[in-house]
Image 1 (cartoon, rainbow, N blue to C red):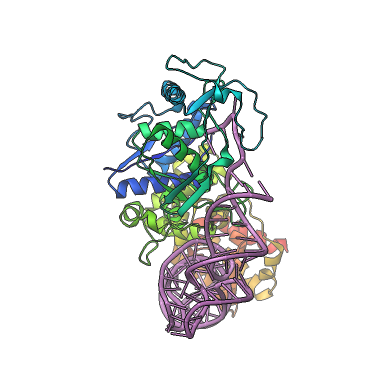
Image 2 (image 1 turned 120 degrees about the vertical axis):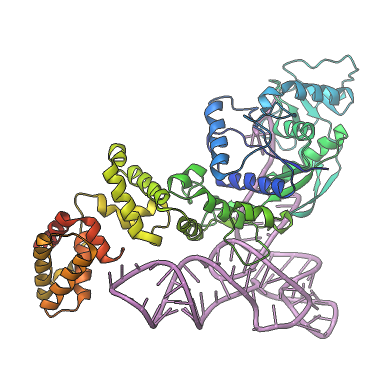
Length: 470
RNA sequence: GGCCCCAUGGUCAAGUGGUCAAGACACCAGCCUUUCAAGCUGGAGACCCGGGUUCAAUCCCCGGUGGGGUCACCA
C-alpha cells in the first residue's frame, strides 16, 4: 500500500513554525516512502479572508520548498481539498451513523463548557431508514464507553477511557461538522495512511478512533510530533521568540537553513553530520527516530546553520538579503535600493563582510554604517582618540588620504602604516582608531577594505570629525 | 482539578543492564590576525529525586517532584 499523508492547516492568516515543522515531517515521510503528500484546508469554521489565509499557507510551503501532490492549485483525485466544499460528505456520513443507531440528532441546549456532554432524551428516540437530517439539529455520537488504545509511531502505546468524552458533537446545529468528525471522514475518503501531526492532538485521537470504529473503517497509523517551545521553555509565540514563519523570512533567514534546523528539532539523524539539506533529509528521515519530548527553539543554532548555508550562496544572493534588510530597517529607501550604484556598494560591502554576515538582519550590525550619512561613536570607544601620538597619526593619515590620487587598498594600507610609523607608533592603535572613526565600532572587515569602501571623501571627513569631537 | 504524556550538560541531541556517557550550538582559553568572524587546538559542563529488582542501574519497576498537552456546537 502506498503511503498517503496530509498536512491539514486551518486558514488562520499565519503559519506557526510548529505547523511548518509538521508540514516538513509529513513531506519528508512522504518523499522518503515514495508516497503522496496532500494539502487539505480545514476551513469549516473561519470563512473570512480565506483567500489571503490560503496564500499564507501555500507561500509558506513553497518558500520552504515543500511541494504537495494533491490539494489546492494542483487538485487530485480525492478532492475537493477544502472542507468547506465537502459538506455533502459530512452530511451523508452523519445520516448513515444515525440510521445505523450509532449517532443521534439532538436539539437540546447543551450548556457550554460542561465536562463530558451527557446523553439527553434525544438519544433514545427511535429512527428508521426514512429519517432525514434537518438543519437546526446537532448530531451526537452514541458513546458506548470503552477503552481506546493505539500504538503511536512516536509516542508509543497510548490508551484512553472514552467515558470522559461523553456523547460529543459530530455535526453542529448549523450543519457544519466538528473537527474530529470532518477529520475522520476526510482522512478516510482521501485514503490517508499516516496521520502525522502535533502532539496537541493526542487526546483527539481516541475520539477519532471511536468514529473509525463506528464507521467500521480501518484507522490510519498515528504519529504525534513533540511541541516546539520558545527559548525560555514557554510556548513559542511572538513574545517568546517569533512564532510565524514569515517572521523568520523577514529576519533574513534562508528557508534551507530553517528547514534543516526544524528537522533537527525533535529528530536526529543516525550519523553526526547535522548540515543536511532537504534532499539529504529525505534520505535520512525516519519517523521512528522522532523524540517524544518537546524541544526549545535555539536561535543561535539556527543562526549557525544559516551561516553555513549563506556561505554556499553567491554574493549576489547574499547582497540581496542585505538589501532587503537595509530597506526593511529604513536605512535606505526602495528607490535607493534600486539604484545600481547602491547595489554595487551593497555587493562590495557584502563581499568584504564575508562570513561575518550570518543572516539578513545582521547586516545592520556590521554593514549599516556604510549606508548612513552620520555615524555615532559610542562614548566608551572615545578613548581610542585620547593619545596625542595617535591623534597626530590620524591627522596625518587624513591629510595623506585627502591627497591620494589612487584610492586602492594598497595605497590605503601604505598611508596608514607610514602615518603610524612617522609618529613612532605601531600600526595597531592607529588602525583601531580609524576603524572606530569610520564605523563607530571595533569589529568588522579588514580595515583597509573598510576604508576603501567608505570612500575617500567620507573617510577624511569621518576621521576629522572623530578628532574634533572629543 | 480529571485524563494523557515527557524528563541525559545552558540549548538541541546520541546511547547502553557493566562505556573515560557521543556529537552539534552556545561558553572559556590558546594559536592565527589590524579588530571581529571563520579556521585549528585545548577546556569546563549532564543521566530530576527517593525507593526497589540485580553481582551491577542513567537504562527495568514503583512512588515523588518538575514540565507539557488536553478537557467546546474551535481547529
